[in-house]
Amino acid sequence: MASESNAAENGGVEEGATEPETALETARRQLDHAAEYLSLDQRIVERLRYPKKVHEVTIPIERDGGSVEVFTGYRAQHDSVRGPYKGGLRYHPEVTRDECVGLGMWMTWKCAVMDLPFGGAKGGVAVDPKALSADEKERLTRRFAQELRNVIGPKQDIPAPDMGTDSQTMAWLMDAYSMQEGETIPGVVTGKPPVVGGSEGRAEAPGRSVAIVTKLAREFYDHDLEGTTVAVQGYGSVGANAARLLDGWGATVVAVSDVNGAMYDPSGIDTSSVPSHEEEPEAVTEYAETVIPNGELLTLDVDVLIPAALGNVITEENADAVGADLVVEGSNGPTTSTADATLTERGIPIVPDILANAGGVTVSYFEWLQDINRRSWSLERVNDELETEMRAAWNAVRHEFERRDVTWRDAAYIVALSRIAEAHEARGLWP
Ligand code: GLU
Image (cartoon, rainbow, N blue to C red; front, side, top):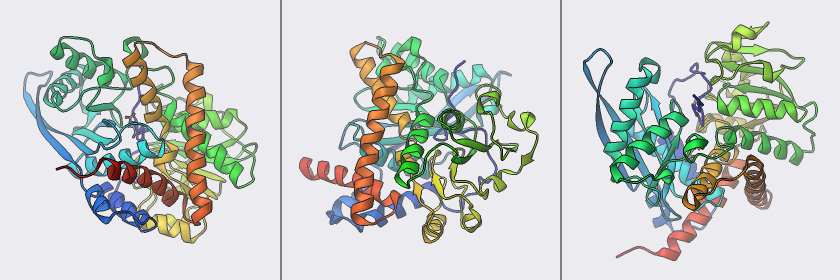
């Protein structure tokens, strides 16, 4: 089973998952902060602080033993001024309404910074997917699809994989939706297996975009990738793909980790010989000669640190100890606002999640186009077009970064917010 447990796509790291700040609080602070740079209509900014709708559903499923258990699921639809809502569905015990709203806001900015014709949404079920059998997970997914049926669709809202969900989850969702609609509708979700309308290259895309922007950022600061030292937290589809590509492009990956700890080798890790979370879950340390704690990985003296596991791992407690020259955010929301301010003060640039891991949703867009046209693209075409889109987004963000002398995060928000506000102004408030 092809697996994509996104964080943007998980990576099997759970250490450091304390919640010093909710995703919604971080997202709102970032919005308010970036809005200060733009002379935006304050009414639009106020609107964007709230989701358009949040759907909350209960999902009863029969456990394998015959008992019935009821789980709570959400779909937070933030903004759709630029197109249908878009964003992942996560299965994680800590999924809450507010988390979905905050992550949905990030999807709105992410799609806008990439100039995709989508808005933002996020959803999920508060459940520990590791505690479910495959059959139970299938029943949960099909029932969740049924509960969301009236509010999702290829022109309305298009879910995708996220933490704890994968291409198989998306195939079940598409099947349940299609069965009810009476026709096969592959465009209702993205991140499906290619055999049922998924795109080549989708599973690797978030990691690929992280690698591409790492390269562009190193070039911006006049450094070659050759010899650049990199530490990657999380070895799921984001972390492992980013690490392997960077390794292949000449960087020296000195540390990679999962929930059990980090493998550390200052002379460079052969990233292809370490199994990713999908290939062999939580096995990184079994292949390591030297193991260090996940917390220590974040403080290593490296050129680039890529947090690609959970959110909120760089916090006020450890921001002072981060030893990297550059942080590239692979997961969604790995840096709290306070930590962000500390790193900025210390002169450590952070390439934000909404740009760095946006390869996932960008190839989701390609998948949606392929589904609508009933015509699949080659892997080569997907990767070429992804590179083109990432470079275009990078250049737009770099332009604001240089012009306004702001952080990379603010520059990305400025690009995204300007596009969203312009669309709101053009469409107007009705009635
Ligand atoms: N869950 C992914 C993210 O956070 C992808 C969303 C999508 O493809 O719609 O970016």
